[in-house]
Length: 78
Image (cartoon, rainbow, N blue to C red):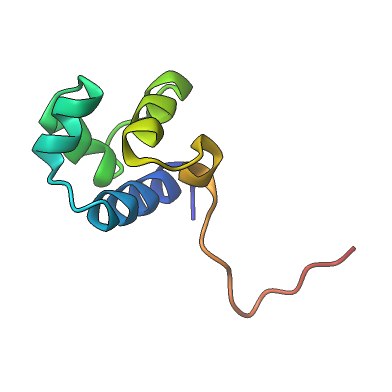
């Protein structure tokens, strides 16, 4: 999963957990609703400042927005 897809997945997940519409999230983060929609569809990249702003509105740590879901079937060598 590429980083845009990870951000899109987490953005949608945390937004829904917070019970916010794209419009309400955009309003609170002082962004455009169409930009939020585009991020959720992996169409745009977001600056780290935007990721931080969205995370703050959603009440999650910024790094959580960029952590991919666990990958099944893959072993880690170490």
